[in-house]
Image (cartoon, rainbow, N blue to C red; front, side, top):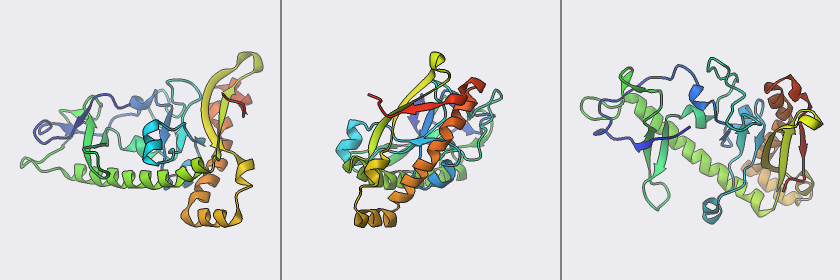
Length: 250
């Protein structure tokens, strides 16, 4: 979705204007999006929520994986966007709502970020509201978006500090999902889910701690959301009604 990322600058973007995109066609190939713990109560009612394999940078930094909302079982598709570009779901993840804005690190220390934009996004052009005033100050929209991005970043770190506990206690197991008849299997997504058998063996005292810090709420939202996997399969077509999963993914 993000292609031509550039730091937002009053010199470079003094005359650039912003207007909401007419549709979500820009996210038509977006198959998933990360979520924060604050989004899970709404997102779990609509999307299957799973966990990706972490990258080396996150592991080295001591952060856990961000839960992600699945939008498709197929590559480069989004089952929640119709032919006209309308997003057909009651909740839209913050990761999508922030586009075409984001934060990028400006230094090696934590907390050093700057607003960046996707210059090729359909939101930018000669129509709409200016990103900067004539005096070079950020517009009200930019100020609001900066606050939104900062809050999203804070919620992201909060979530990753919780999910690292899932890694430490080895509570995530690999899984694959496909759909269709046995001789016509379509779609194949690999991800990780909570190992409920291991979860049930966690000490009661530790579970009490996790209940207070919010991790159990995150876990329950994830487990509840897996019931949406069949609903997602149905969005790919009537033949997708036999969605299946397995625990023997490699």
